[in-house]
Image (cartoon, rainbow, N blue to C red):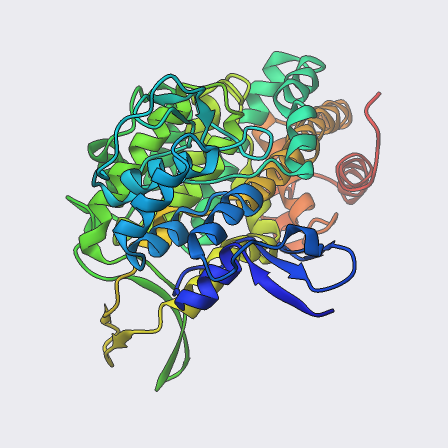
Length: 503
């Protein structure tokens, strides 16, 4: 099909902008009907000829089409402003001072460029939303009387996440996973839930470290568990609090007293002479601004009724992409998910969704979610030096790549993790404890053993695929007969290892 680019695609091509790709490209068909093609997370929208612009060479007309049909992409819009004569923008707005899209462009210019255009304030005009709430998740509006615009962005000009209202996300929100979790827990005895919760906190902690291929000592595990349990009591998340969290999470030798001062990245040694780069974080000089923007965005979103999972996706993944510390970024990223979900009462009290366990169980999905940002980023970040001893220097301006990210993919992934945690991990652990109690009771009736001996027997048989090894049998259970061992092992197999049901 013969077609010509329109909107952001036309702007990027004509101005040769080096920006991250928008989630969709638009075209005008020279003949025939329009259609939509969706390939993975990318969309192609082809419009019939009736949508053609009056002057396709007028890039402000292209920008108006982009905002109207492609949505708002602050990175591309700012790059457009930087390459467009200021006087042309003023003239465009003066020609249609009350127009919806001219006012949006006017507002966005002053918002992004931090300078006021020589234009008079709007007078007695109906306010319009900057983002269409039917297509985007939005915050409570901040009114701009100068432009008659309701700024309902999720953030600010330093850091502003975007999440689109896709069908998948609407379905997750309508499923009310927080209520489903409460309904599930209401079916079981509170004491059983408390025992399950103790396990889940430890499991979540260990999984978060294992994702980073670390094996923490008992003290670090205990500190992280305590952090998770106290997450909702953190009143405000500040730079100082994040540094405190980092100091608790990492090995004491790698504590940070401030945001990092060196360039970090994620790489893989292919051979002694070549390192494959998977991710490059922002320059150290950009960290403070980005993190101030992120924390302000968090405060703005927490004051609204936006679904907590949407907030958690934007902030936690935004944090890990900024990578503000030398060490501990991944664990803090996952801690932030729990902090936000508990802060907004999405997570039932005294329970935790073992999200890191879900991530660890299927690292391919987790990596793919991270790569939905990191792969396009690497195609843009090409100007850097990497010394033999692994010191990187990024030579190009890169701050804008991390400022205005679309986190729609991350939000969907996080919802899926929470759904699996509720229906598989949490209930499965409760049922396991019920089976465990049943097995202990039957074992006690067969052989009146001390409680700690029963626990040890179950552990050893369970870990050895249903059998007690002769070495462990002789070492710990020499007083039992072969018949008793066989009988007890069968009980453990029947109840805990096979699909025995709970009466």
